[in-house]
Length: 98
Image 1: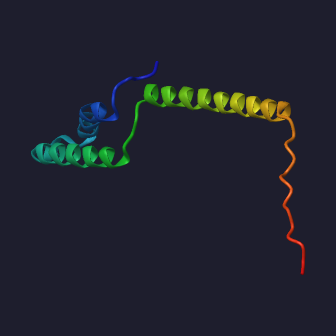
Image 2: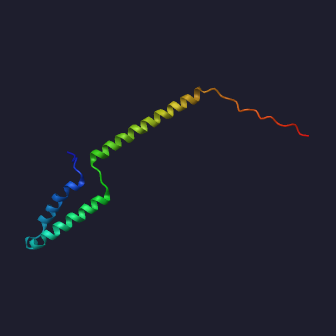
Image 3: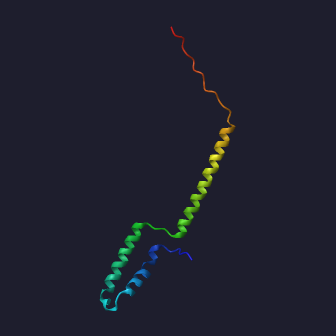
């Protein structure tokens, strides 16, 4: 099952899982660690400019449709160029030499 949530929405769960792995006698550091972890992870994810899988799939489908359209347009241009009568290049008149 794919998640439609932004990556930032998973930070609280991740931080809590991380804090749960710490020894119980470090409890006095938990609040500091929690605040610092949340801040660091939020900043990291913001810089990474991540998108959800759903957003990625939408962009992928759009790109595929655009490629198909470009291919169709190329075929139409080729067909039109094949139907076009050849137009001879204009003759240039030369001035007689004296």
